[in-house]
Image (cartoon, rainbow, N blue to C red; front, side, top):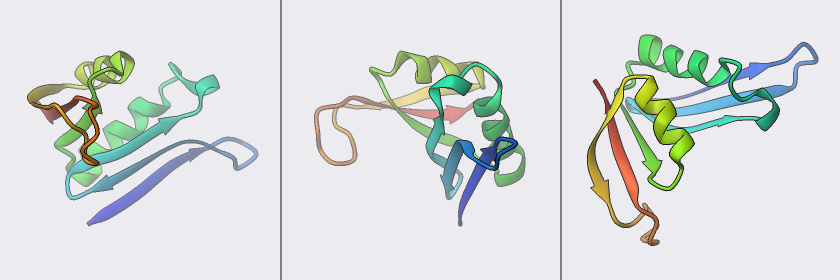
Length: 97
């Protein structure tokens, strides 16, 4: 099962979005000017509570994203040296605690 959710402003412009596939957050994006305002948290909580999300993969070099997901209750259970395209970008595989 795949799902897509977004948050729109008063003018109906998308300010944040999330894609989920089979209990895993595949993408989460929040516009820079709307970060730290709770939109990402709202989307992740929706994914956990309504879509039974349990997993997310995060680029190890993206400390902000790693910290956000840890704050949301995810923990690293595995590390891969390469990303899904085989490129040398270490990926942290995280699971909801």
